[in-house]
Image (cartoon, rainbow, N blue to C red):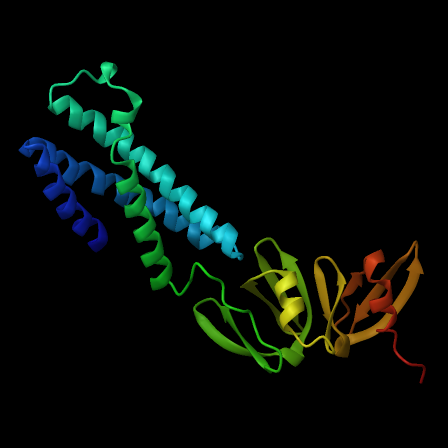
Length: 241
């Protein structure tokens, strides 16, 4: 709310350059109200579907900012030019979209400030570095340190990964590929395009059947491997007692 209040003051000052107080009041009132309302939509998208990669994050932020700017321009500019005595139907499109760049910048700044306040960044930080023994996870509003050795497997789940343990699972932003690169390859191995397993949690391996293996973990989970990971899966076969 503070952000849009400051935006209102700036737009009021800018509106005065038209030499028309009513125009200044319109730009002061309507655009911040639209921005405040549209930012709720942006907040919902960021909270529920914030992607993991830099490119996808940038595309989402820019795309939403441009959409918000379009809505703002198509509401504020017709009112502004109407107050100045113009016929709205006679206005060219460039006038209806006037100051669109300023509106885009407002939404971009709001997005970056909101993401910073909620502990997120345009540039993803590495999930975990090799050699670490724990990883931060959340459940509800609580934050925990999860021992990597307790993770039986990691599964892709949209823009998240699911860290599966014997006592439950945790969701974190990230991709299977990023975890495969960062985790200790001697312990965590990828057996499917969407699954990484902890070799220390492998109880048995059965197959191949039609080129595929079934991996049974200590907690009873059964994971199907992909044909392309056959060599890796064969290395998980336990030695004979």
